[in-house]
Length: 476
Ligand code: SAH
Ligand code: SF4
Ligand code: F3S
Image (tube, rainbow, N blue to C red; front, side, top):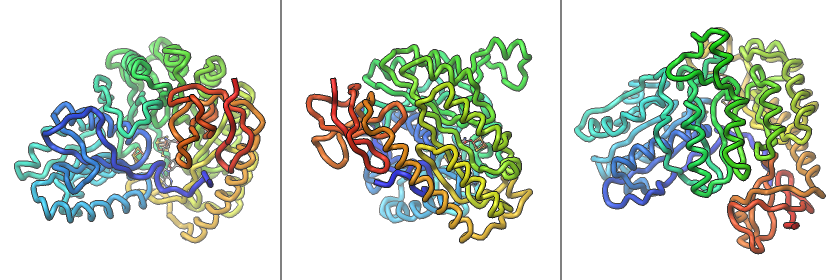
């Protein structure tokens, strides 16, 4: 199977079902698009609605309330949501009392405009206003369209225990921060998610303990830039801290260590690291704890320092390669993945070739590769012309994808002949006699079931592979 795909979002939209077994009452259909943070947010929304007596349905035709949690990262992410709203239109015609709500980043970007553009929408809710959803539904039910897109500097939903949706019961997300202060020139996230804020570490640790007690064996700590996590106690704002207060605060390396200590059998992953902020301290913690996975997602975006400067990424090609060298030095066995954007404003063929050569040099295990999509209100939209023709963007993207496919295949092959500690996530899609799980580097491993089950750690000797999956058998 080919694992590196040209994808529009990090995950496809999917309907997800509440697990708490509320029966009777009103029915919610919830569909999510976009990144892991959006999926984690849907679990907060589900928790809020389940407390209000909602059960879920996976058939939108039967729902009292339809929610779409949306993504605005690229234009095609928004096109997909609009198409989906057309499907819901028919259901609403049959049942005019049905409430259709748009949540998340596209809701935040378009605000009231959504109500004018898409007549079927009753409710528009931004990422920091989910506590208000029960009120907003009431308002919509009484025939008034409802909007809450207020962004907050404090909201982290720290006290809400998410209802785990579509979960395999083994791995789960924990949001550790919200928003982003970075202002990369191509990116809409600072506008849709607001200012960066970190969540109280006690609530993060408590959530990790709770998940472990419920049988989960892997958590992924989520933030747009986890390396800039900083908790300085009740209500203190990062930007107002003195150097001394900063030194007394809890940073990401320290948080990661605390989560690693929750239980040696709880694997810890995190996403996303930012090359300008990733410290050697974090790398040393990864190296020190066996249960912190040896895998880092380090988005490069471009291999050209001039383009990186225009993107406002805060690092050069050399700085980025130095961070890669630090990973290889401190955690030699580490898996590394990345994101890239092809055809950013004014990118020349030579600059594109710098991205190609960087991919060749780093040899990523995995990559998410995109064509540049201009987003309204971003710095790039205001300052630069989106002047690379679509077909050139596409050709450049294809060149990178082809190279990455080769790299992934080489990387996967390197795992053959070695024993991997695999956390079993479930049965293989292809065969009920096979289990699937991941090794610490995040590579999928498939092997015969025997007496093993979901949630077990199994040592697997890899005997062969496809381009992205290791195939093997359990060894004692
Ligand atoms: N916070 C993360 C990324 C969040 S968005 C980081 O800083 O790396 C996920 C990825 O989408 C980005 O890494 C980037 O590669 C891509 N992306 C963001 N905006 C884009 C745009 N306007 N056009 C194309 N790709 C974009
Ligand atoms: Fe967007 Fe940059 Fe923030 Fe990532 S770090 S979310 S790319 S602004
Ligand atoms: Fe999309 Fe918002 Fe995530 S724009 S990528 S859902 S933060």
